[in-house]
Length: 133
Image 1: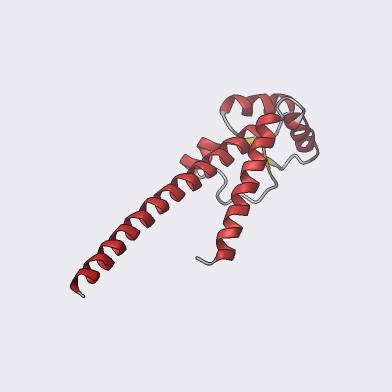
Image 2: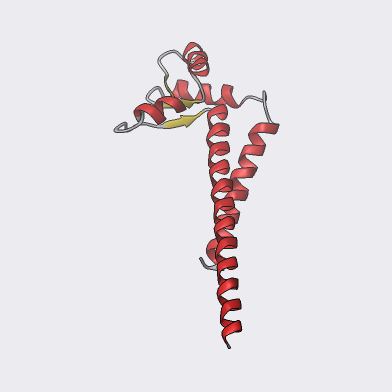
C-alpha cells in the first residue's frame, strides 16, 4: 500500500468520524423534521430508518412515505431492484457510520497484529542467518 493510499484511508476514516460526531452531538435540532419535510415533496422517496419504531413515526408524519429499516436491508435486500430517491434518517446514518468505523478499526487491529507476526518471523530469519555466518 502506498503512502497516498494510506493517507486517503486515514482521511476517509476522519470524515466518517466527523459525520458520526456531528450526529451524536447535534441531537434534537431538526434532522428528522427536515428529512420528513423533504419526503413530503418527493413521495417516491424511500427513507432508511434505524428501526421499525422510527419508520412508524415517519409514516405518521408523512403519510404514504415508504420506509425500510437497516435490518430489512441486511436480511431481505429491501433496496435491491428499486429505483428511487433515497433518504437516510439520522439515527440510521449514525448506526451505519458506527458499524463502518467499528469494522475499519477491527480490520486495522487485525492488520497490525499480522504485521507484528510477520516482523517477528522476519526477525527470527535474520537472527538465524546471522548465526550461520
